[in-house]
Image (tube, rainbow, N blue to C red; front, top):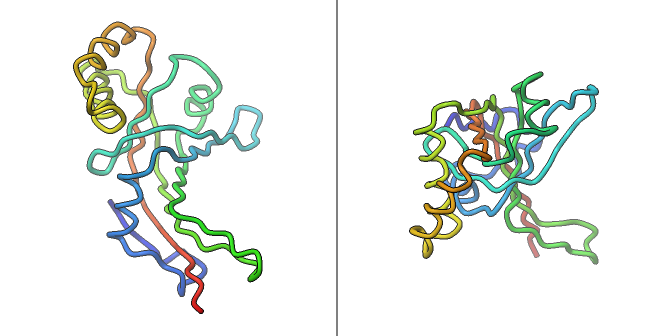
Length: 161
């Protein structure tokens, strides 16, 4: 992944590449943000899995998300790690990772099934046999999106004392 924190405004709050990759791999979900068909923003939480420099998502084969991506495939995906609100200090400790890239619908059936197997491995590793059967049964009504990540930045805030 092209890890690049140079565009982060608060250079004193950078998160390391190693920690950013830990957050990406461990996160249950992130927020995919796109340009909607009415020129506004459109963001939604999605479960995902990473393989190399790509993220995979599964979804229905129709809907607003697919219309947005057909119009403009450039997206961001935000993952939030640990947070801790400090009311008496009027601040919040946090970790976050922002991935930028292009998302597209995967057409190749072998890659689609591979992505579903990766998702099964992440979210239900104890039930792979049943999960594969479920994936095969619902394969015709499942779309797979692949986000080819072009850049990653990450930051955090830790409050001392």
